[in-house]
Length: 131
Picture 1: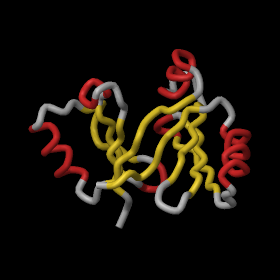
Picture 2: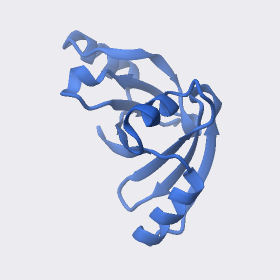
Picture 3: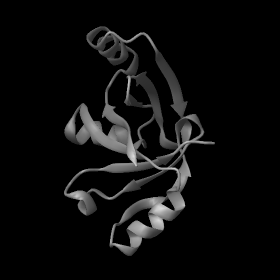
Picture 4: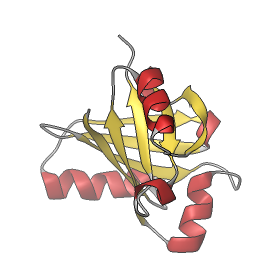
């Protein structure tokens, strides 16, 4: 596995993307809305990873709840895997708890979130990109 992206909850994804672009000297930013998660995202491509800025698109979005409770900031770390189903089975065998089931994510990925209590308070996402 490797780190795929760091996700940050924001109130205004377009304004935040401009700040990150200027601060990091990055030109390439992709915007996408993931209706199933209730978020609009900006993906900022770095040399060896990505930063994903997430803005809620509705009041039922988990990001809206996060922002209301904690304010803008680090939301989760995503780990890339090519064998998501196998990794989930292995991790469940080690006592790791997940939030829901494997589901579609942005850019055609498959994703599943690891419960923060399984990783010392850190929310983590496993993601598998399409081949």
